[in-house]
Structure formats: structure tokens, C-alpha cells
Image 1 (cartoon, helix red, strand yellow):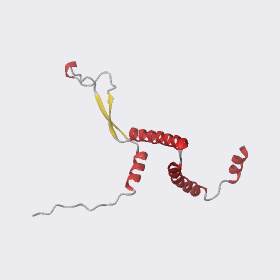
Image 2 (tube, helix red, strand yellow):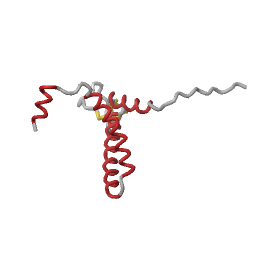
Image 3 (cartoon, rainbow, N blue to C red):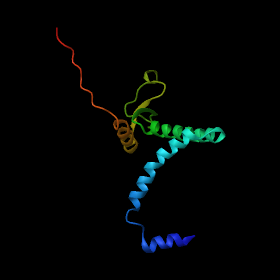
Image 4 (cartoon, rainbow, N blue to C red):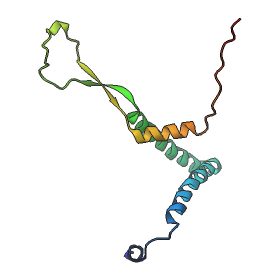
Length: 126
């Protein structure tokens, strides 16, 4: 089945290939949701279970990359300013911020897609 790759290597792809691919991926979401509504019986249950697992995985990755404060134990063996043991906390903790710009950006775009700017209501002075 290398003839397909060979042809693509020699002649390239259609000029509108990227656009067609993008549109097809955009339509795929609608087709999946329609199938989720129409699927009956065991097929519907299996599809719902698979989709639930995908969503759970996506939520985990988003939560992992979301900007948040995480606690990490201090790595250095000998601190610069020596403190007596009775003044130390049980675990020395450093706060570190972890973020992933791409996932955050996508979430903001999706969230802001349907947002409508509302005018601020000011209290009336009596």
C-alpha cells in the first residue's frame, strides 16, 4: 500500500486539501452528537461510556495544566539560613505555578465564544 504515499510524494495534494480537512473535522463534532442522540440500546451505552471516558481524560489534562498553586517539597538538602528544628514546619513547601498556554487559550476562546457583554448596573444615589 505504498503506492498512495508514492503518488502523494510525486504529485502532492489538492490545493484545497487543508481547508477541506478543517471543515470535515468541524462537521465531525455535529455528526458525533447526532449519533449520540440517535444510538439505541447497547451501542448507545457503549458510545456513551467511551465518550464519558474521553471527557474525563480531557478534564484531567485541563486540570493538570490549569494555572494553579501546587505544593512541592523543598529539594535543597542544606538551606542557606539554618533554622532550628523546633521552628521548622513538618514539610517545607515551595509554591509553584504551573500553566499551559495553549490549553488555557483554547478554553478561553470556547468560553468567550457565546459571551455577551452586559452593562454594569450602578446603584442610584438617593
